[in-house]
Length: 126
Length: 368
Image 1: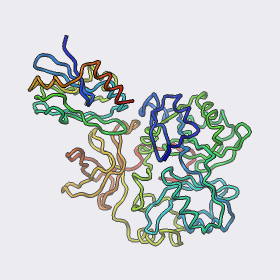
Image 2: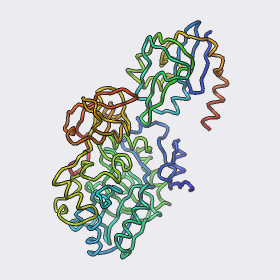
Image 3: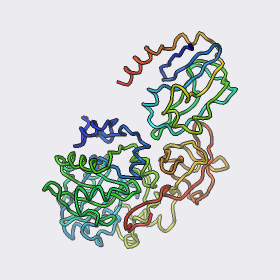
Image 4: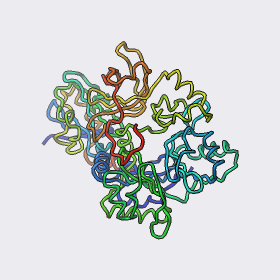
């Protein structure tokens, strides 16, 4: 089974060998409300840990999407660009944002487990 | 400063509202359904909005009061019949808008509905301009509830019979639970609808009965997307102390009969009527799905800055990003190509007609 980790910026990252799939958490979508716009990084571009790698906008406001690890963008999910409401519907599965070829696997160590993230999300939204 | 709560606060919590602080009040930004569903429910059925944070200023007086108020507001108050309403402005000496408001003639004077964030200042300004000669009552014992949407008429009529005969921008007294309520046919969504001024103690049961008859509570989030689709201004975003009604493209609200007369800001307005204005409020439609929010800079095709967006969102009914803002007058013609700077990129857009969403007002007497 592939490992899933979480960032303090409310991204999830699913690890699969040298590759990773990244999206935003259900908790994040609940805070954002109805998502009406998504912008993804360019395929082939390099993104740096904690740097901006996309944007989501709700009816209320725009929020940056950050990448929890550095790497090269190898794929992006056009489905969420065409229909951003999919991000609200299925944020942690089909509505992923982008896939990376990971640059430095040690960057994963600082990320949270599911339990740690749930505790963090509960504390920060209280 | 303590945050005030409206008489519907418990009801907001009961229906799952996300509460935020707005103009010193704890107000619902959205309920469980979310902004898009709430927006669409208002357009297809009807929505209930708690707007009790807004000011309800009652001023008593006769013909002298009408004359004195015409020295403040650019509205034709002498021609106003009892229970008739007009949209107008409180301006400063430079013609800038201090607040936009609705003035209704009542049986013993006038009722002015003020924006929440402006109401205490408006009260002081109006009181001092009237030289303390009249009785002013910024009545905080009343709630204000808006019911908007194509089914508003039927829903309200089941709770308070007879209101369906009201014409747009007209009001009257009705009775609810043996208490007087004042209802006007007006609103801020581009839909037919009503605003009901009611005692705090009756507000909750009144709203529950509207819900029982098929309406739903709608938050400030959807109120904002609804008014933007309808091309209506939000004070503080689209209107401010440095912007005149002419610049705001609200010339229609200043009757010709008043242009040559004196009121606060009349000199500047008269000049602008004659010589035109440098900037003008316009509708903006981005070509792509990118949303341009307030303060987005606007450029021409030569990369010169020509204005600024003041409101922008995704329009749930028009299913497209929408915005309004101010541009140099020479770029205000419909279909002019402009560029919006969003996250460092220049996004192509067009100047377009307002509203984005066609109104459904009943027997409308104003053409926006």
